[in-house]
Amino acid sequence: GGGGGGGPPPAAGAPRPLAAGTAQRIMTGAMLPEGADAVVKVEDTDQDPGPQPVPERVEIHAAVSPGLSVRRAGEDVTAGDPVMASGTRLSAAAISALASVGLGSVLVSPQVRVAVVSTGAELRDAGQALEPGTIPDSNSLLLAGLVAEHGAVCTSVARSGDTAEALAKVLRQAAADADLIVTSGGVSAGAFDPLTMLAQAQQGEAVPVHLDFVKVAMQPGKPQGHGWVLADDGRRVPIICLPGNPVSVLVSFTTIVAPALARLSGQEMADGGTESLPGRPRLTARAAVGWQTPPGRRQHVPVRFTKAPAGSDVGDGAG
Image (cartoon, rainbow, N blue to C red):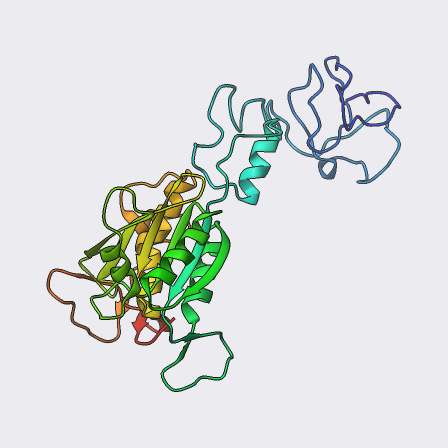
């Protein structure tokens, strides 16, 4: 057909209308000229790719039918259709999709602010020389890392000794700039478990810390606690109290804290608990070893996936 003139090919803005039997050179992704109903790749013509003068005549070496290589308006999304569901986490792809439909800003939920508190007079900094009866404080690092992995921000990491008074002070300080407090240790029935001692000491209606303890039908992580801490600005900051064993902390965070963070950040979750959390797919594999689950309790077992000739096996060990 005849060429569309000798001007430069339009890459932005509205192209010139086309008469029947004529063609016009446009750039990939450009707006379709009025009167055009198909796009032919330059590779399917007698023209060389790249910056070339616009010819008077073009030979087409491929069959052309209406709609060829045309992306119609509204093909990706129609006007009025929802682009993204409320509660969607804004990944790089999600932000790109919002920009592609002309949105420069959207209403979002702020990142959840989480304060981490580890309890126990025996705790020492990682790498510090240990005396008899002391252990490294691995839970603080574990919880702070898990908070970041789940899209929240860790506002403070603190430790408390084994007295109810010291713990109450640390919790009040942690509540100052937090939306949620997560603690580890001190939730059992031992003589020096500070959280249970604090719960017994804080009785009445005007207490600054309110704690309740429950036994959850799972292993590990049977003892759990929850409640609130009164911040100086009058907010009741929720608190989740996890056991002290590091594996129990990991399991408890995944099953209890992670869903709470999702709710606080406005994320929508389908029925199914942790299996519906973003980025947590459900996998099925054949177990290489056996184990026994206590009656009436859900068991969470750390596993390592290994590839076997017959498929994927679950091996013993951590991973």
